Image (tube, rainbow, N blue to C red):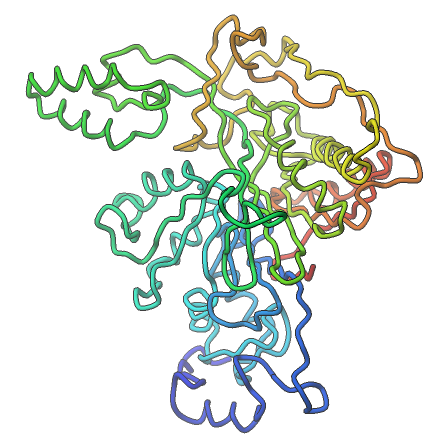
Length: 524
């Protein structure tokens, strides 16, 4: 490939590139080969979900951190028919695929994840920019850590206002963090259409658990992502952090600015306003306001997300998790809600695959997981899912075994004595502000307060199902966000796969585990 050849080669450009495409492909229509194998009527595309893996790992290499593309294959590569789920890697992943699989002398991609896509340019970078601008619709963001968003931030200046703003869709806390700490004119220009920005990006704040006013029956709560795809978003926990404050609100920023001006009248007004803030509003105080009251140390859950993505025609679904910790050691267990929503869809055969992180091997202790999963905890979570699937398949049964109440006993070694204990690698601005205060009531798990870090939740007795029943048969579990080894040791993904398969077999779960490669295309 000659990088200097950047002429347009489709209907949008001129010259021999277009003539070549027209002569070689007389049946070209809408960016794919419309004719069937014998030149007759077009062969209908099977309604599958296609997942393209741009970045499968959790770092530390920056060129392959988390980034996935999802589309319905029935849409035949039309504009705005692909969604990105996280974008730690975006343009670099697309360029890698184009350079690996495509001969730039061909105007239709012949192999690889973008097979049958029409390319308007003759260089991989130019075609990658075209895919980002034209083909990819919304960017669904699970949480704003750099390994899940830095690619889009870096790529955002190539967006064109003539295409309309690119949608960044996420939970409100995630949008707040992106606004406050990335597109803020300090870390990166404000390219959004809010607060006087450039208008290349627009924010869509999602309803946690799905918008109940959207859809009917089994589609209730789902929002249209693009042609052929619908989705809904659940909040999950990604560790916790000990902190004194949360993101600053517009009201608090105004109060802080007034106090900074030094006007005594304004300072008195600001003081009264600060004291009148609700607990949620006062989670964050600017330095000036914090001097008015004594901050209270608390444990705060770091918010991440899990996206259900549904193909419109077939009803097939997948779940893509952001970073997530196990309920058993979470200060705010939320995974069970996801499993309860997933179970009937797995039981009906509609939900076929889960993309979920498994960052570390079982050699890593709980206090060093920093809001992530390892095989032993992922298996425990899948056992909860399996139990819910059995219940969904047998709604009139009495259950699969006795379930005890959640235990609130806190082992001495799990007491939150330092910020290292069960906290995330980074403090998430805008994290869920359900504070777990360090009071005697909270530490003992009494009704006067929620459980402290280290309190367990969920099943305290192993779930049971019949030996001839594997509840998660036909479910594929794709392991993402595995931390790469940079010291020349054994491959972590191979160890994690071995550990998971052994434990899943012992539990008779029935699911299959896979570690996707960079540039892989997965059909579901």
